[in-house]
Image 1 (cartoon, rainbow, N blue to C red):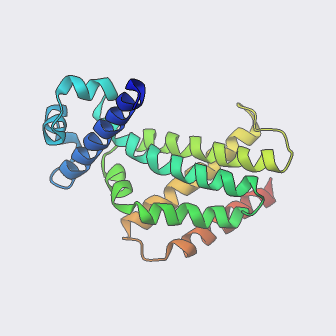
Image 2: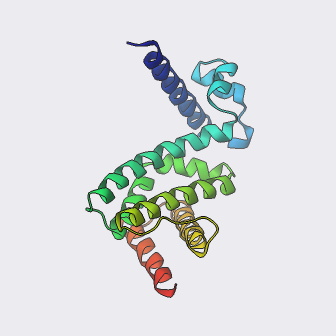
Length: 192
């Protein structure tokens, strides 16, 4: 095994330990009360090792969400590229992913980092919309335009539906929520 590969495996393992430690601590007490030293101790790594991988506990927490969305984007991107996936299916798949990772997402929402979380969701909505546009042979979304505001609107709607769904303890199946999200975004497109 090459040195760079073993370093990469070690870094991924350390990041995973730190993520697990933070999520375990968040089950015991509020995010605001958790100290980086506690996270490092729980993960059985040094405090400097924590800072080799993350700048803050917020960044560590968001890395959990990034992993979920990166997995989602990879799957969706492959399906869009093969022309098998339609918009409605993407909306359903999005809520299915959120249901699968409900514990982690619930903790993210309780961490009082809504603005950062909203920006992350916006970034992923932008990526998905651009994947569709690329497959439909349309131009990619520019920044600072009316279409950019459309991304904001869709991301905001996704965030608010997710937040309400989670707060109500997911009373509807993910498929129902995905279909609802699709219908609402379709209405938005019909008015533009």
